[in-house]
Image (tube, rainbow, N blue to C red; front, side):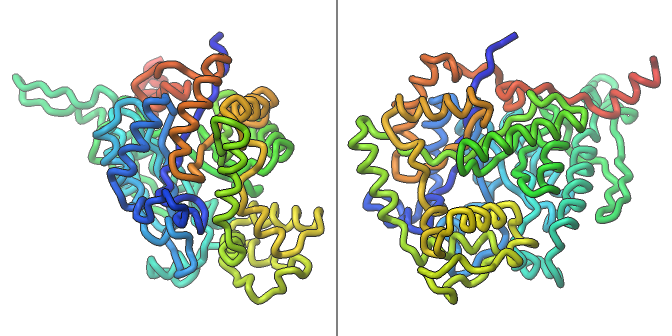
Length: 443
C-alpha cells in the first residue's frame, strides 16, 4: 500500500483574499484581471507539483465587496486559458447550482476537461448571498435547506449528462461512414423537483471520465451533501482542534453513506507566511496584519451574515446578537464566529480583527511551516491544504522553502504520478453508468 501523501491546491485570488492586501507596496492592484499574473502563478504552482489550481467565485457584489471580488475573471474562462499553458496541474472552478442550468454546466466542465486532457474539477456551491437572486431575475433567494435540495438534484443531473456517451461510442469508421454507435449514446430524460433535462450531452466523456467534485459543506446539510457527493472538501480550519473535529465528522458521515473515507480529501485553508528566518517571517506577518483596517474587517465579517451592516454597533461593545442574519446565509461560518465571540467574550472589534488575520501557527521558516503542516496531517486534521497567497510572492517562498522540506519527509510528491487530476488525487475513473447497466444485464 502506498504511503499517504499531502494534497496541495493553490487558490488564484488575484489581489489577495483580504480587503487591504492590494495596498501592499509590492502588490499589483490589477492582478485579478491580469492573465500574465495568473500564468506566472500557475507555472510556479505546477513546477512545485501542486495538485490543482482553484478559482473561487460569487455572483453578487456590492461596493463594499473585497477588491478581488469587485473585478475578476469568470472561473471557467481563466481556467480554460491556463489549461493551454500547463500540462499536469488540476484546474478547479466554482460554479453555483442555484443560478445555473445543469445542461450548460455539464457542457462547460466537460469542455474544460477535454481542453485540459482530464484535469478539470467543479467546486459545487449553492451561493449564500441573497442579492444573487436579483442578478438572475429571481424573486427570492432560496432558503438554506432548499439550496441543498437544488444542489443534490443539479449535481445528479450533471453527472448523468457526463455519462451520455459510453467510452467507446465514437467509432470514427471512415470506410463505413459510421461516426458513432447510436446504441452507446444515451438521453438522460431527467424530470425532478427543480430541473427537467432530456439530454444527451453533445460532448463525449473525457480522459478522467468525469470532472472531480469539490465542495465546502460545513452546516448540517452541507456536511451531509459533501460527505455523500464530494471527492475533496474545503474547510476553514480555524484551529487544529476544530479542523480535527470536522475531519472526523466528515469521514464518519462518508462511511455512513457507504463510501471509503480515504477517498475523500479534507483540505483546510492555509494562509501561511514564510520567511528565510524567524525574524523575516515575523516582519512579513506584521506587514500582513498592518494591511487590515477595522472597517474592512467588519465588512469581511459581515459576509457570513448576508452582508448585514455591522457599522451600526459599538466597536468596543459586546459582540452583537446577529446570529439570525447568518441562518439563511453562510450558516456554518456565522455560527462559528458567534460561538467564538461568546466563548472568548470578544468585542465586535476583536472578533473582526481576529477573523481577518492569518493564523500564527503557519508563520515561520520553511521548516517551521512544514512542522505545522505535518502536525495537522499526521494528527488527522487534514489530508492537505488550499494555499492562499496573503502577501506578494509568498507562493514562491512556499515552493522554495516549505515544499522541499515536505519532500524530504516523504509527505509530498517529487513528480506528478498521473496525467489527470483524478489520478494525482488517487481517485478512480468512474465507470459510465450506461456501460455498467449493460454489463449487469449481460451477466
